[in-house]
Amino acid sequence: MMSLTKAHSLSEKVDNQEKSVIFDDVWKYYPLYHQITGGIKHFLINMPAAVKQMKESKFWAVNGLSFEVDKGEVLGIMGPNGAGKSTVMAMIAGVIKPSKGKVIVRGRVAPLLELGAGFHHDLTGRENAVLNGILLGMTKQEIMARLDQVLAFAELGEFIDQPIRTYSTGMMARLGFSVAVHTDPEILLVDEILAVGDESFQRKCFAKMNEFKERGITIILISHDRTTMERFCDRIIEIKDGKLANTYKPQH
Picture: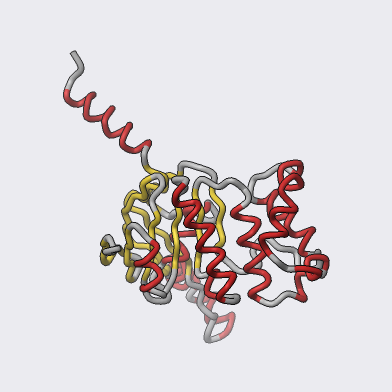
């Protein structure tokens, strides 16, 4: 007969498999660097104290954060500038590691975290679409097979064969979003990138994300637009000073 402890452990393991993302008491700090004052001689004389101060100077972007995201859930992350939202997204994407705690991510991630990230500004939009698809985990054969779909969705016309450095922020957002949604992601991360560009393309992007939502793909969004977030998200968490300040389910 299975013991209660083993039964609980098995139940917890099965339950965790239904989670796309788990943050378990996660902390992330960045070192703060100080300008040397008083000259090199002063620094050398006081080196032990100065080095100790430099080692101890840290900015904690995330402070003991814990939350979970169910498979197929649309989660909104809100908070003031500097609250730690983008750091959380970067850890989910695997771009940075936590200083302490555990981040578990289950599924293929397509991150849209920074405008132009993964693009080479001297390459054309077409060439960058291929490069970005490969960086997001596709083979060259896979991205080439979908390239026509990617370019059609981006609606960049003749500009697709122009260098990315000639693009506006809205054009880069179009191309970045188009590549990401054609990589068959299991988790889509969107950090404010849809705040740029024209309204018609934003509607097109949300229509695509609604399609993903119906297919059970996990979506995590960052935005300052509470109305849009409450209309689109299943749940919203609010972060302040790197900590979980609030969580709620919007009334649709």
